[in-house]
Length: 264
Image (cartoon, rainbow, N blue to C red; front, side, top):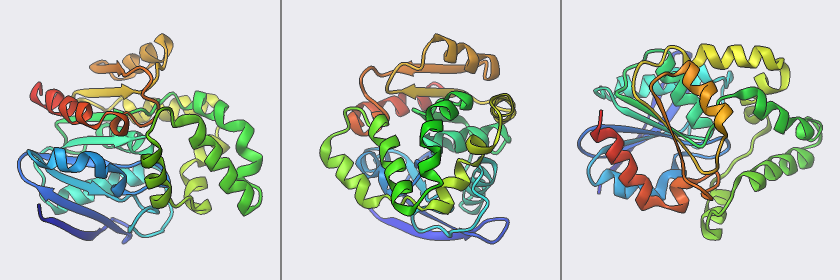
C-alpha cells in the first residue's frame, strides 16, 4: 500500500508533518506526548484496508517543526490545517493520550469532523495535575531528572502493553524538555479551578458524536463530569488494557472504530 508523506505550514508557519495512505472515508490519527505518528503502526494497515488514514506528527514531535506554543488549541489548529490541505470531508478524528486532548479541542473549536474518538485521556485535568505534582521538581531539575520523571510517568501508565511494543515506542520517543513542559504548562502553572474552566471551555463546543475508550476505569465521577460537558459522549472501559488499548488489542481497536463510524 502506497504511503505519501509530506508537510504543510501551520498558521504561524510551523511545518507540520503527516502521512496519507489507503482510500475511502477519512480517518485522522493523532499520537501521544513524546511520540510520533509511527506510534500507530500496529493498527495502521488494518485501518487503511478500508479507510483513508492520515497520521499527523504534532508540532514538537516526530518530523514536525519544534516551534512553540505547544498548547492544545494550537495543535488542534495544526491538525485542521492538514485536514484543509488534503481537502478531507468531515474526517473521523482519533487521538491517544495528548492526542485525545488535541482531537477534543479540535471538536470543541468546531473544525470539520463527523466524530471524535479519545483513547485513554481523561480530561478532568485537575486530577492529572495532582498525579503529576510529585514529579514537578524533577521535571524542572537536571536533564537526567527530567528524563527520569517522564519515564516514571509512562511506567505508571503503561499497563499490559507487550514488551516489544514498549521497546518500539521507546525507540520512537523523543522526550524533549521544552516541548513536554510547554504541553504541560497549564498543569504546572494553573490552579485546579482554572484547569477545570480550561477543560470545560475546550469541551463544550463539541457537537459531533464522541467516544472515549479507557484502558482502566476512570470512575463514575469522571464519567458524570464528562457527560455534563459533552452530553452525547459514550464512555467505554476495556478492563486491564492500560494506557495503550490500541496496542494491547489492535484488532479489537480497528473493529471498534469501524463500528463507531458505521453508526454515525
